[in-house]
Length: 218
Image 1 (cartoon, helix red, strand yellow):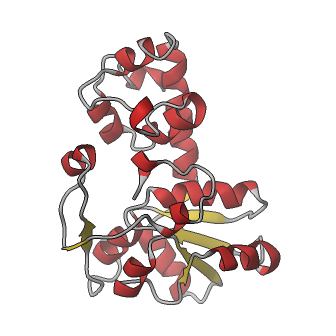
Image 2: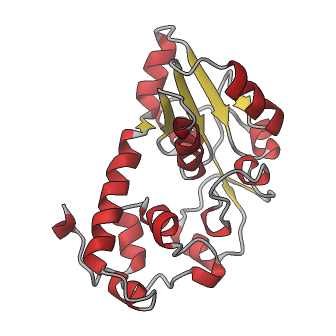
């Protein structure tokens, strides 16, 4: 598996090939989580490793690939989720976007994440039922899913592609949108689709739960 990633790949290309690479780098090496530990899209992975205490690039690649595989196992495809809901399977839906996004467009029967709901979830929600977390495009929800998985929820999933993919693959009546941003990395790497929304930090970040990094805002 490690041979599929060239140490001289640019960070832009790496994040296209393995979208979870930035989370993997931040979690283990504290790389790419904020402006002080960030990287340029045109830097190579080898260059990033070299200027971060000469990290072993092969070890870093192995970690990135393993993390990507773990993330894939934690995701659920929008069509798969729709089929389970259609069959009447008990599914808990948690929306970790901002209240403004939630009020603008949401999946039916989804709960907006709040600190109060967080306490209710940990106290009262069954840990064995399917528990699906979604955000705008499937980034922040992975962090939230990992958090709940670590707290004993046996069947927690992140919706692959977020509500944006749901509107494409399942319910085209849901309007698509994009978040306005001044971050040049996000402007260069996120397609502009749908109506713009100028919004504050998403709900998962606002509650100051684990992995609260400004570079990974979804």
